[in-house]
Image (cartoon, rainbow, N blue to C red; front, side):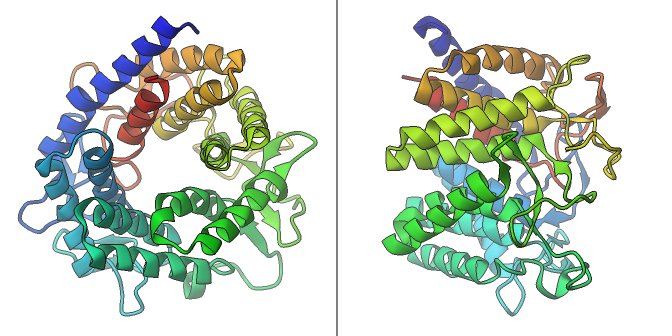
Length: 388
């Protein structure tokens, strides 16, 4: 990929972010009456449900604070971030400081704090807003939430864990994966030794314990001894999760000036992509079974927006850090697939869910899982990665 081509993609992603994606959410998402954001938006941006999902509130507050920091210090972006921060501060957590999964539009709890990722994205939001605004209460809140997350690592769901204890204890890939990113996001607020210890732990979990070094496949669940469990959960692969984790590893590699880690992360990323690519219809499968057995997840063959966006970020970073031409070739291939199928040329933003053939399954632009996060974050990341 030559320099002109790189600059073309950088400009394309910049314009798509600032002229299409962000205006869509600015216009349709803020709840000026109750605070926070509506995320259940139909194809044209109309609100079709007013429930508020806490992790999406945190993600969107973080996103607008990040735009303020990395693109332009616009007061309207800072104000939009504050809209989510105030809502989270007032209604987001229970008396123990753990964050609910969902709330009513007014902020009344709907679903208990069973999901630690609500806390992860609340920490990101408070941390980023506090850093760019100078609000010390927010930065202190972010550190408190982060420390509480670390204390819950061994049993993230706590009393809401459905698994019967002791029969088949498994640990899940998602928490060490997200911690590797969250720790970098909050690094300037944390104790140096805590940062290094957390990153060491995350690298070991992601690149050793959940990674099968023989096949280079990353598993979603492992035994507590880091072994393979021949079960539905133990055989489960999520290519998008693994690929996203690899660009987190690349960011750590850059921070630590570790070319060895960067090269390994690229190799692992490319393996997930090659293994997870649908050779017949194109796109990346959502879930796979490591032994090729039928899956419990009925949506296993769907093509999801975030999977392809995180792949584009990982490929751009992989190419920049290592110069591996496979990353460049795959970037073009995934870019063409994603923008031809997920992007809504008529109304803007991206569809989230396609069937295996690449046809739109749901024409919503946001809901319980999709909000103002993966699309704008990925566009910002690709733009900035390929800019120079």
